[in-house]
Length: 372
Image (tube, rainbow, N blue to C red):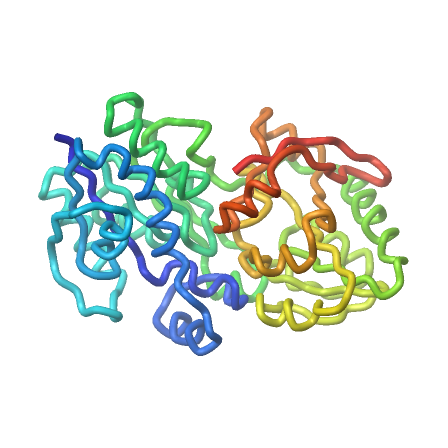
């Protein structure tokens, strides 16, 4: 009988929708809770584990107490073996490291963890090459290549691996950034090491990259096309994070957040670096469009670094009012893989999937597939 280890970082992703751009450190977690943030990782862990529960009679699940896995496993239908001890509601990165070490001692075959890049670093520091791992994406920033593209995909890959339908293992990068610099608008990414991950290119993401450097003319054309639409009086434009969207703001001569979400109307800044709740309040009663770009190398549109654009916000705006922008080089770098949505709302993911128009220049568009 195969053994599956499960670790949940219960505060991963908590800072996303309130615009904190991360969850590292107790001060950020407390601030997120003060702003009304709710944990994202428990729900996403359950989504993955419900897929794994299809083979629950043929595997043994080992996990940590309470919110670090026990509760999520039980909600998904498992009766897990619980090891270790924690203080409920007061978990730390040290608990994650200790949990991983103890699971290795229990000779698990695969470690499934829910978190973000910080959690992946903790797992790497404890496990190294000792056991294959797979991440359930639940953080704000997910640059590492050790994560599945969605929680359900994590469950699918875990099932295939535990049933010996996946036998190849690859070395996957563990990346993380300096969150303090990130909040100041600078992206400083660092490679910390490699973890062993089941190889399944459809369901496991690539490391985030800057993509192929796009020509200035293409970016300028994309900006001009979007700005041309801003002559629609009184329509709000939510500008998502990213270097591609930054070109729009630069063309308007507006200082943008780069890693946050801004609102523009009539080519003027309405609000900058707004949270989910602020977005809802500001766009209520206004015709609104969302401008979002593609994460290079991964292809995500929603669910990576732009959690402020939550299901609630997207539904308020309407899926027909989403403008997707990307250079043709960035799309070509995906090698035919679809763009991805991971909003945390299965129904919305289905609505967003299919084929969409992507703005690739001034009055230049391509039709591209979206999946989840």
